Length: 466
Image (cartoon, rainbow, N blue to C red):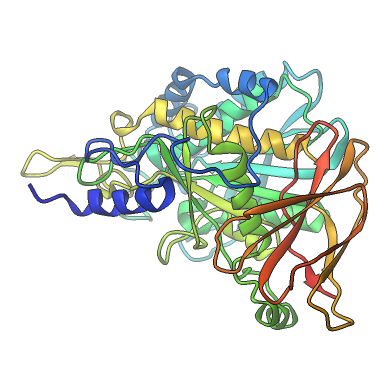
């Protein structure tokens, strides 16, 4: 029998990434660990493995069902009905996150973050939009912040239909369930840096809630060094029935959305299209979360989002923050943005919970947890990384600024061929702020990453010319 389109595409991608280890069409992608890890990979330690084991697919499933039980969570639905509509969902999320915060010893705070959106596209009348935000303050470097989000609003075929049932199980109760489970597990721990857990509203009407959150952080001068949105992470089954339960896509832009003309000129001069801060963040996810501890393969997609589509990471990108989107490996469009119905052939449409896979979503949560915990515990991304260009030479001199972390042990220089998507070589250079490499900057790409006394490494900083 001729293989399906989905099988061919998935198998091709798996062959390229995993050295040809491909299974049959019922489960088209290999389990992680079958391919060669990047040279910069960081093996999960005992503490991280213990944390990941606490993530519970049954709790994730229960959260999805609870959010679906509100009937609709459309942004324009009722805000004061105690059982139906976005207001009821908001109140439940607040209560749930506050119950997690109670176990944090005061480190986690929870707030409804509201504003009134004046009439705008898909917002016909002034509408209150409320994000539910939990902040777990870091114990060592609290001013360094990482954000993880999912959107709790939902929709059907007509984006302006605020009354019909809009279950939103996959899009995006699944992402909110990931955020809640991360908040529950991490609330009892002491991350060195601050982690923000956000259930945002208004995504389906135009990313309104996440834009408000990003703008508030920007206005406060918050040092957000990474943001992830989990949107449509609830199913491992594609539209043709094939399953890929061990892969999660991560969309990461190259050319920054916030790039100025001056920055664009520098990027063009050095060929930095594949080395934005977001691309370095995506490489970091592969380094720490594509392994046997998460049970997942992270497939990085070199796009800001799916083809001509968008999500809640985009307002963060537009404000200069590194941000990326997690999404399941192949969407089934019969189960998102659809009226709940059965057609004349007996096919069920609608974003219903029976089409989600809580075990898969739990593995997505483990990818997020491994990433956020390592980011929070490792040193921050190095600042001020530069390649000196004052003299013509075939060697490369790099400089950077020493970080403020008390647990900083030193630095590593990484490099790769210009055609390689990942860093292939790592050179320990010690607790210094300059290093010369006997390689030409004309021929390879360089980066710098910090090393903590715990052995954890930061994301890579791509140096600008100086």
